[in-house]
Length: 180
Image (cartoon, rainbow, N blue to C red):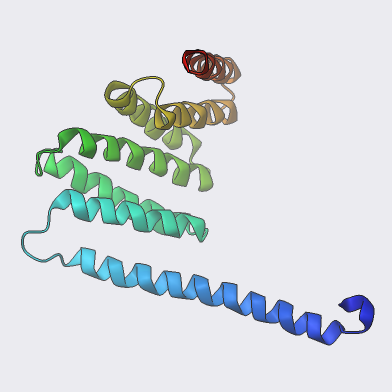
């Protein structure tokens, strides 16, 4: 369009697209804030792990909007709730402990965005031990956490540990692939 002398039209379209994306971000943020208000004052009978899970979901939206501080705050509250309910309120212990492991992984990712690399490694290590125990070594979530941990070790200068983990992940994937 610009080649046909329609620069103003192209600019208007680009501006409209930019406004739409900005509006979507504002709308997402307003929905997240509304959800957080609800989770802050849960109705009687609300299960703590449901509230924690909701905060984890909202944290994923905040991380996509590049707001790691808000993400970290939400995940800290979710982790506290998970620990307080001891994963046994609803009777579905395995699902809750796995969600806790995934929450720890997200916490590690938020720490990476904030350049808190040592803390990220701690969260990834805890997440790995939980998901490996619950899902096993071949599960995609477990392998993803291994990869996150390897990248974190590399950033910490622990190159040999990072290489060892990546070789382990590659071996696990090859082994799983050969079974199918």
